[in-house]
Length: 62
Image 1 (cartoon, rainbow, N blue to C red):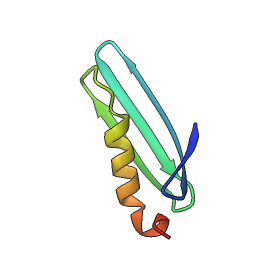
Image 2: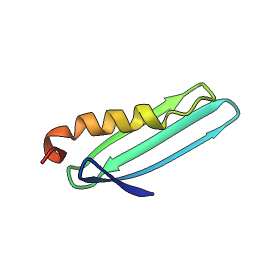
Image 3: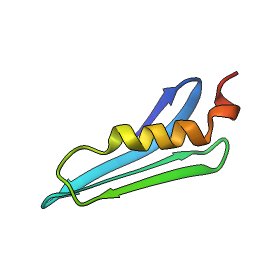
Image 4: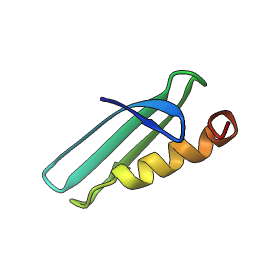
């Protein structure tokens, strides 16, 4: 999936099974990525997007 946040397109995917959750995201414009792996059934997409937007903040704030 690809969405635009703060002016930058992010490609991402999440998933989960048996009490585990994962999230992976990529900003293709800056070649920056983030991955969250968790041993919990709770969603981890918010922490993933926070990591990725913080890592690319300087490039996307324009």
